[in-house]
Amino acid sequence: MFENSPNIANILPMQHHEVRKKFLDFFHKRGHAIIPSASLIPENDPSVLFTTAGMQPLVPYLLGQAHPEGVRLANLQKCVRTVDIDGIGDNTHATFFEMMGNWSLGDYFKEDAIKWSFELLTSKEEGFGLDPQRLYVTCFEGDENAPRDEESAGTWREIFKKHNVTGERIYFMPASKNWWSPGDNGPCGPDTEMFYDLTGTLIKGLSKQEYMKADEEQKVVEIWNDVFMEYEKKDGKVIGKLKNKNVDTGSGFERVCAVLQGKDNIFETDIFSELMKVSKSLGSNTKSQRIIADHMRTAVFMIGDGVIPSNTDRGYILRRLIRRAVFNTDLRSLSKIKITECIDALICTYEEVYTNLKLKRDTLI
Ligand code: SER
Image (cartoon, rainbow, N blue to C red; front, top):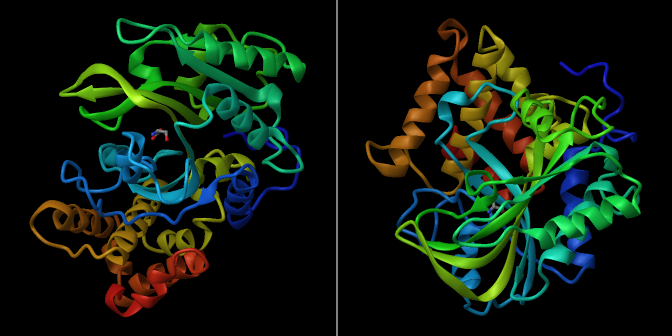
């Protein structure tokens, strides 16, 4: 769609291994312990079937327990979200994804979190080298639970001024957009979200209405979310403040790779290149090919973490994904060889990061 847009980062496209490394190195250099991704199967949370956000395995620490690695953490966390399963096949949704995240457990707060988000996104030396003129941000407008987030907006104003980024690009939004919680219970708070202009044509800024239209048309896409977790929810209601002021950031790895590789969809990034070669020989149209690739990838990661197909809970979701992948193939082209090719494509893409997939190859095929 945006093939003629200027080079998205004004630099050479960054490959996925490099994006991963840049993110981790950036936060390691700023005092964060790099922790491994937890399993897709939540260890201490019976309320969810899968890990759905980077912060989920960290809930006890966001609630005040001391983390053995300290108060600054960062990682890429494997996540599964199946709520949008019917939307798979569009440009940006995936049932499995990795979330890049950095956390402050009662240490730094809004100003540092926002400054580092901006620096990582735009620094040509240490970060992704994105164009600051193509950034748009939202902040929480305030309600009965928490005040309007002038502090975050003030930090953004200062940053934009320092970098000569002009025009309207900070928008206040209600809790439906800019308040994040993992569910009805647990840590939560207002957030500030960062969006990137994929078209390279909106650099003069946008009115709020124009920004909302650009978001709807996927001309701007969300690339990062900084949540300021200082509140707690119980049974769906905010009940007060937590012991600590925490930061929970989340950035969709696949989406950021798409932006950095000048693609308007995640399936054309190098993360999917091997897998899409196989799925293109299995599905008859783009949507089917993307569904096959997405569901196969999720199924492989689920099995890698010990899920087995069954009629209940996690096993049922896995079975459903496999069935949907199969239904989207042109059945004549489906064979054991093709399924093995999908699995090998995934093992090859992830072998440096998720070694368990290679070790489980026999189970997977
Ligand atoms: N928890 C927030 C999210 O999932 C930020 O990490 O977007």
